[in-house]
Length: 78
Image 1 (cartoon, rainbow, N blue to C red):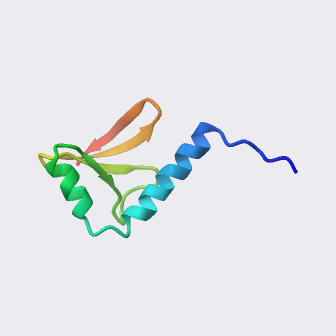
Image 2: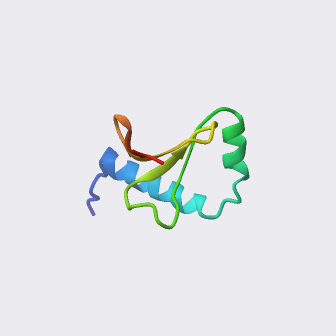
């Protein structure tokens, strides 16, 4: 049996999907801790367009972003 190797893009898509699913079960404590440490957090809400994430910074400002290999692409400042 020959398996089809996954590309790094496939792995990245799988990873992000897993992160989004795991985040849906989070009570927010880890995100709050991350913000308090000075790091931004990523999440989705029910109305977040598919393929995009909300990036929230410790100072409270938020951006709608698309993540790719080059980094975050800011789609809109929220």
